[in-house]
Image: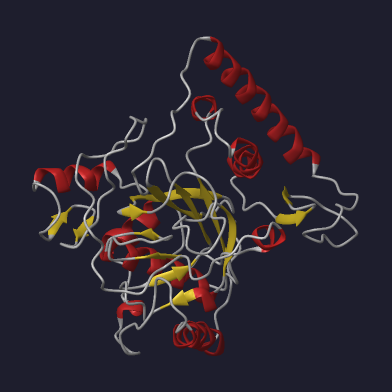
Length: 364
């Protein structure tokens, strides 16, 4: 059976108080500046009857732990939830309305890159008063980012379909994602893991992106991806020698920038990961030998948008009107990615890139 976490009136109050305090503290710029006044109620919207029925059908408790995965190239956000077996299972996949930058990690403040890596989301990173409807701070920079000198702040998952270094959803989507996170905290989960990837770490995608300048970084991220794929348990994440380690056990504390101590990975995990990586490496090599072309570098684009939303915008002749879709409302000020100068494998529409509306301060 999965672990149940008792909730006391005090702990529920602490979750709400933490969210309120972080919202008040975010007056430094970024994706959530100058939000609406406290008490707007958006953060306390209940889960829908449809979602409650879906949870019951998948043998999941409303307040059981969650885990979130993001894939840039596919423009998808997944919410995984612990079922009664104690393992995580996919609950729902959400099309991402907008992300900015290119494939690859965030390096410095102002580069418009949405982060990639493994992040820990605590209640104080939940912002109920975001000017982008609701927001969840990714926690960038984490220990790995700081050890590697990467800078930036207030990188969010939020609503409003507008991004400058963030992952932007529709308002309807972020309301549901926020509520799922809130209920997991109410259930006693102290933090949940966010795994942000450039793409699904499949043999085909590793073959396609083999010439990227970020390939070694992505191979490291794939190790964590594989740990989760094998176990369907949240991997323990540590950093030493300026690199990620997953499910590493040591008698000595890990220090992000210093030499890794002696450690071991439990054999039942290590064996499964080795087998998966061996199969993936063979498939990747075969795909390359059969002539799978590498992705070509592109210029003139800024991020991506899920094909669900791109198609909707195209069918309306481009941005400029509010568009309602089954996945949520696309606001009239949406800024779709421009057509790439050189064709890439992602799906982009041939829209001139509008000048971003000066609605919010967001320079990450």
